Amino acid sequence: MDALAASLPGTAVSDDAARAREFDACLADCPKLAYRVALGVLRNSAEAEDVAQEALLRAYRNFHRLRDRERFRGWIARTAWRLALDRIRAASRREKRESAAAESAPEAEVEAVAASREFERHVAGALDALPEKLRQVIVLAAIEGYNTREVASLLAIPEGTVRSRIFLARKQLAESLRWLVKNTPAG
Amino acid sequence: MACEKYTGWMTDGALGALRGEREAELRAHAAACADCRREWDAMRSLVAAVERSVESLVAGEPSPQFAARLRARIAEERAPAAWPLFAWRGFIVAALAAAALLAVLVVRSPERTRRPSPSAANTPAETVRPSVAETVAAPDSSSSRRNFRNARSRAASLSMEVLVPRGQLDAALLWSDGVRAGTIDGAQLSLLAERSAEPLEVKALVIEPLESSAAASATEPASPDGGRR
Image (cartoon, rainbow over all chains, first blue to last red; front, side, top):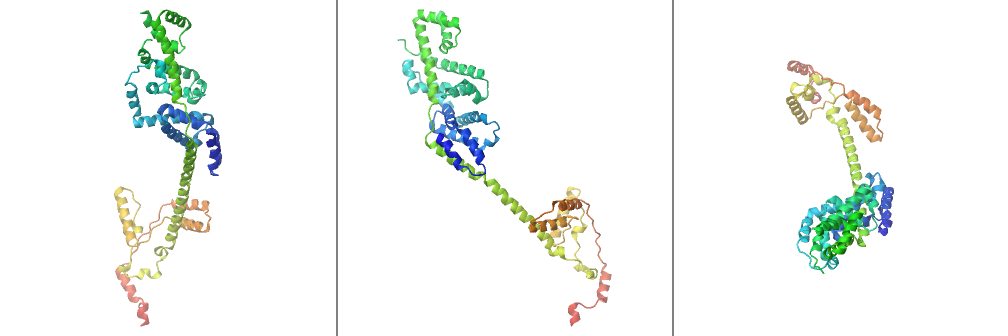
């Protein structure tokens, strides 16, 4: 994404060159962040790219309205999240995924199941079933390099709130997938 | 019964959120109960696997074409961004041109430039066209507004003069001159605008009686054509 940041100023016209340069400076690793946030919701690379593009384009359009440039990354993350959710809702994919996740029960051991795509599908279903606030923090916290402080900064909420939400999210995920453990044959 | 109690603690234990004495108790029970030990081990594996799975869900990079696509879309975005400005410029120029044209038309209108000749009083009655606008008062109700509109449309169809409030014509002239010369004096314009707020002076319509017109025509010399004969 550095190539993107380096190439953007070249496309700027003289009128808004300063704004374009500032936008470019703020952009940094935001394309990756937007993509990963969208991927955490959509779990489809192509769709996540579309959403990330849209989020960054909206950020460009409304960049002049952002007074506090420090909040740019959080702004991008929240926009990508919202757009991804909108896309999910529009296509009613969430219901399909939830029903698909509840269909079959695994028969293999936990470790073997955990390694499979089937397990990922179950985790994705359980993740989708989480309340939005919990889902948002666990997805952001799962993005490489984002600790609780950074997640708190992205969402503009206290760090303690992030920690408690992460714990609740992990607990709810574990509880909802516990049936995998129950179905594991004793060995 | 004891196993059920420890099963309830297992999720918190696997997440590392169990208080010290409870964790020790759970460990002690798991050491003695093979089923609970197996379930707790499985629970810890599950929690770790879920965490890895969530991380893998959000791992990945955008495609190499991502940057180029974004660059192209931003470039597209910039092009139409300039459009409204040009559109407004065009609109403003068109509005100014229309205002100037209107002012020139008002000033150069043959109806406006025609002045009543001294012999107008001697014109035969059927050729006199009374100014409808002069006889129309300002509207004060919906019916009178309707009448006013009808009178105005009749006046337009008869190519009558348009009664212009005092100051407006001068303002239009000044505007026209200013537009043509490229300079507009705002102070003079505002002074004339104030004058235009003054009430209109409606002149009484004077129509000569037919007899006097006939008498005047009898005493007058013959028409220029007739005189030449």
